[in-house]
Image (cartoon, rainbow, N blue to C red; front, side, top):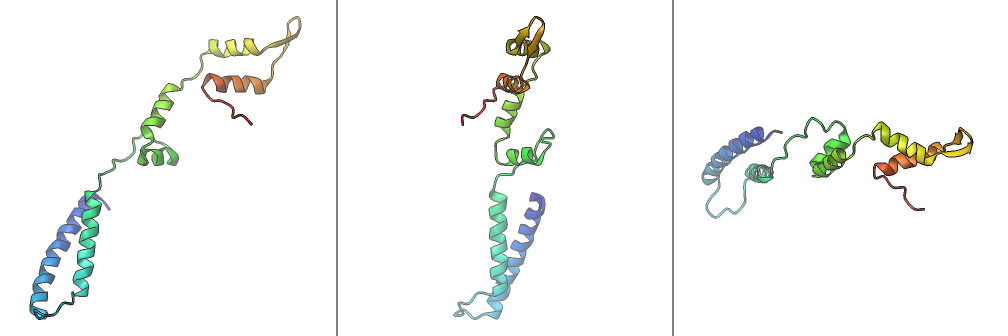
Length: 135
């Protein structure tokens, strides 16, 4: 429910509560301590709406929050940290990739070399600040 609708519902319930209060004065005697059940329901709804409207409004997630996980991160307040990490990570340049590949080459003889794809992948991860957990 939007905040506008909650505000409209609150105003309608408050007006209805006033009328119920007026009827209680007519229906119940002065020494009757029981509360009209319907009025109690209305007052509980008024309290719930006031509480909900007092909460700070969370704006919708930005358009760049494309996945459900990113939208959840936004609502839990993690978006700025996630965005900072995303902005920090940049693709490696061709020169950086070649540099990593040359560093990992193990020459067998002459122009022939061996290169472990696993080591290469781990080196790319390390270049992006991703560390393999120690076992």
